[in-house]
Image (cartoon, rainbow, N blue to C red):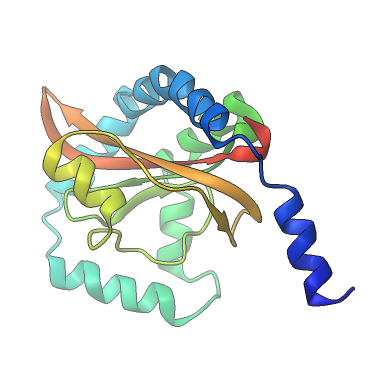
Length: 178
């Protein structure tokens, strides 16, 4: 198959009615908000924040994370965490609609993830900054996600502890499976 055929095949899978897809995302928001408030997720973020890791250390972890595609001890630690296992259970409950999810601490460092994100530090991205600094949800524009091989829209929400924002969570929702 030529690249042109691949591009047309991929584009053929994009839902033509963006407004209908966004309405479906909006209907999922109560469920996503409940996941962001899950006491075990809140506790995992609280525990990671309490470790007092510096931003320099988070950036060093990010460089190491991106330096290799191999499953390093840090990647194993994050993907094997209790938070990651909980996210996987939530993903299974939501089915194919949830392509990926990951939780971030107060600096934007990963606490848990359902699959291996391309980087460890999310603190320089809107998916962390908007929910963490403003305390509101962010729904990004749909895009083709190379890691899940599907068209997704990412929804990021604040994680709160006693009303105070302590981290954020991002859900990648498969547009083809909404």
